Image (tube, rainbow, N blue to C red; front, side):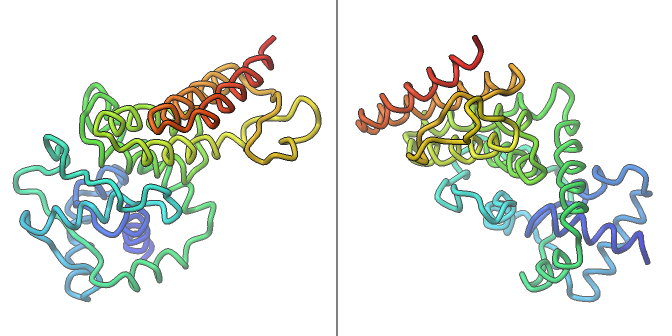
Length: 256
């Protein structure tokens, strides 16, 4: 059944674990009871297992790492957040019974379809709460949102999240992790800019040249460079700090 496959595809793109509400929000066109019945069917087929509140902490950490190429990996302990807002009393939570099932489902999806689902999931997450997900303090959820926007190449959506989460990581003295996050976001910008001097970068692959892009894109690129420079200062890597500020100035001169 096409609707059943659609729901399983969404589950796989959501991550290793997810909630019933997560799936239903992505598919407002489907009846909630139908979505729940489909997940129950997957339970009976042992594709999914249902997890209780006592199991959620470990499963939630796994679901945060949506993007397989995330530089942060599992090095950040998000259990330090004050609350886990996504948990709702009486909510049903699921995970794949084996990673093989999720991998199998993902391999049946074309890249364009995956990107479309990542975009739908991210859009649903942003609408999840009146006032927007960006106002919340749940860093694990924000990082998940970042990974979904990153997976559909939405730099203008992902970069502000990286700046927000990175600032909080610095407050926790997780400076190296924040550098990785900023660089992850900065790497996305490569698809959104054009080199002014007809070459993408200089011979030094870490050295930026003047680029041409929309002003809001350049603004975020400069902010990311400044944040990276500041974290290098915290790590007492002053040469890297100075060089990154110089790169920011080079990019800033593109705006003249």
